[in-house]
Image 1: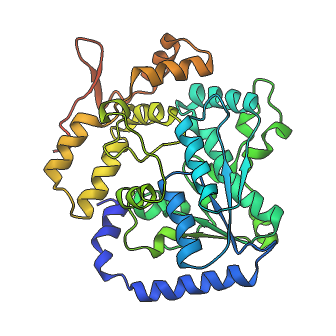
Image 2: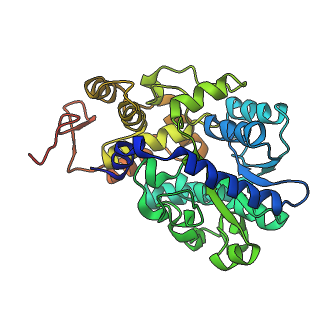
Length: 355
């Protein structure tokens, strides 16, 4: 059983009153150490999770958060993403927009795509580093993140099954915050300051405390967060699940290339966004396992050709180069090509292939 299912199986035993007490202590720490009038910092994209976090901190916890948004370059950010960050500002939040240099950003994306088959590996460094860096600069020691990935998807690299997020640097794509591998193709260390997660010494010296806010919410889920945020002005996707591999349309709202990366992840590991969604819905008892299997068979790993073409145009590569890279990273143990040259799973979804 995976860690996420183990956690879900014990959800009824959680003492929510005890967690409320822990959250009260966390809030007290933030209020006692406020700086520039702010009790905490929240990293936001303008999406469902960060919108719900910001509203919860402001309206329920009665704290004053400073929002930090590490945004995509103008030619990658989509109109939906810009509108949703604007929605947060309209809701009354002070927001700092961090924008790493577009030319370096694109070089890093190319490097991540060719070296790891994952263009988002370098950009996630920048996204995660921006919040603690601003916390250090503004001397605001409390940082709120959303879900603890160790509990929701089984990402054990964070070394925490509670609300302590100070080991986020060990997430799979962050690898301890090491960004030195980006120093290629003319990129030097000063160019990638935005991608350098603060060291443990820097975090300790500034007294930074990172907390997973989702740990304290009984109703934390992709669907619930999407509904609540949409009721507060969030714009969601209107594409069909066949185009985006997402049955809810509330994920990856700020740009389109994450959908491409989800397709590549599917070919590497055999699962993508739809699997993550239905697993959560099955655990919550809102759909059956058989219903989930049908959704995964139909939509998991789907990606519109338009997104692939736009991605290739952005990175200035041909679609042939794109598919050569993708094919090289496809897991041949679980995928094979059909007569039309399309990658197909060798095994039925939901069946243990080892049996």
